[in-house]
Image (cartoon, rainbow, N blue to C red; front, side):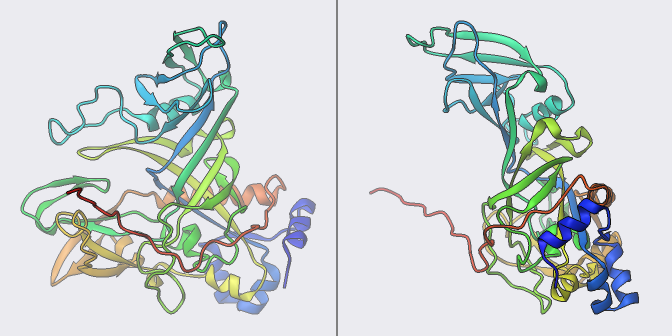
Length: 395
């Protein structure tokens, strides 16, 4: 048995043994679980992919004379200003003002909140246009100016739902192409698309939320942040394999970190034809090896992680809950699967190579003592489920 304090002492002294979630699999196979648990202190996990439920709180600083912003746009993307004075929230999926969206189907969605966030983190200028009704203490009614990330007092990424523990595999059984947040799904099941780092993914290496909880320190696009709550749609009461790993969408995390500390390589605005805008993020989470059970969970392999194949032409939009089949991530990563005797091409909208890079970046930071661990002060809910929206028609 180890403690967080003991592991952090080893990190600070430069003695911590750290491996990523890919490396640990063979290491445990060679050394045995007991010996490896004694030797290894931390396993790093990571993922990189689109995470729509992301955004940032920003403070512009006051103008002279002062303004109480009631409406505002950054590079023509509306930002939420129902806050105090010069605070605002920019959502990743917010579209640029007057974007035609899907008026001319399928829309291109070339620019939105995610692209503004990427520009800011890259150090580029964005245009601020702000309006107000004017008050005695905040007399200014209109401002047009340019800002960079350095000009902002605060710029805190605050993401309600990141790091889905598992997710669907998407396909299209209809006779026409459809356009989704998985990208282009060809007709008659000509392709499947998934989104997960599989055996590197954080919550798949801690399936029962033993070490990842509220207060856990995370690597969010290069910045040191933390889990501030369970993620929205956290649904831990789900179908699981014998190893505890979900076979469907399950847990999620709410994450936050300072944008001024982020690396633009791991923050990308993404456009999905026919769907909208999203933000691709790189996230790494360290798992402290406190005991053999925790280590065993981090040795999960792609072949032991299953996801459900969902028809995005009918079953997903109509919320039927139906699964056509299930495949493991070893099969998915091969680039081709067999379904009812038919070979189908498979692709991913997440990047495994980026996830490996992030896991190794985090590993290096722990080994050089610049990233220590934080023990969660509250567990994620182990038996939660999501509710459906009630549609009430007034008589």
